[in-house]
Image (cartoon, rainbow, N blue to C red):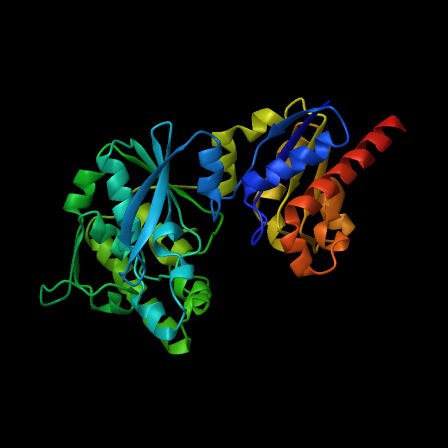
Amino acid sequence: MRVVVAPDKFKGSLTAVEAAEAMAAGVRDVVDARVDRCPVADGGEGTLDVLLAAGGRRVDVEVPGPLSAPVAAHYVVLDGWAYVESARACGIEYVEPTPRTALRAHTRGVGELVRHAVEHGAHGVVLTVGGTASTDGGAGMLRALGGVVHDARGNPVEPGGGALASVATVDLTAVRRLLDGVELRVATDVTNPLLGPHGAAAVFGPQKGAGVQEVRQLEAGLRVWSHALTQAGASDVADTPGAGAGGGVAGSAIALGAEVESGFELVSTVIGVDEAVRGADLVITGEGSLDAQSLAGKAPAGVADLARRAGVPVAAVAGRIALAPNELAGAGITAWRALVDEAESVEDALRRAAELLRGATAAVVREFRAGARS
């Protein structure tokens, strides 16, 4: 029997790698099987951990955080590609979100990670863009890459989305020189454009501390920034799906020619999940919370889809499950367990996540074997 365990992280308790270890132990508690561990991610938090487990090399770099204080960040190099997670330099966890931080936070540290990777030989950069504190449209990133951003008087524009309305000119000459011959890709499952009611400021600004007035200010600034980029010869990304991801940092990358890809599809291809599921007897996936968002491009749904197309049954084990049986079945999941059902409380489930995950995995394997025998 061959079983593939392909979980995402269990946020607050287990990384995807740790979850895969616990699941593998649960399988072996029931049957002497070959277990292929394929921890997965969707391009968001935890992606670098998965790439490290796949043989990537970690590169540590101190960069400016979203409010300029230095933070210890890193990226991962695998097969000549540098994987840069924006949140490592500009994560929302680095600030206490307020209207003031929503206007001041910037992405310079993201650009410094990209620059470091390129200057140290990366022939391509994959930028993952979730979880940022900033809505600066990627202006800070471009400045770190050599972009010159001036106001009408020829003075450098202050960092942060709140200052974008004063942008008059952008010079991308040095950015293009640095990135000449370097392939750029953006990993995101967000389809929000840069501007408008579904854009970066309107949708994500409030999550970063912006009130109604700040959202208006950020929206106006992003509009000016988008126009300035096109005046500098970059692509017009105002309405491009995905350009609003990461507070618009995706927009600046796309404006430079980056391709947008599904985070899960990109990561799963790199680590070979599609190859692993072919010929397996059972695939087990999971994450901390299996809910409606899980069906909208998240890793467990992606794993289930790959398995379904390969004709392999799929089970899911999650911290909690907020989907109806018909929704799970529609996603191709035929068996499931929730850790909270076996715990005294949510806190208990978080505390004993590895133990409970091992036991729940063993339970679904027993159920699968019983069904196969009958």
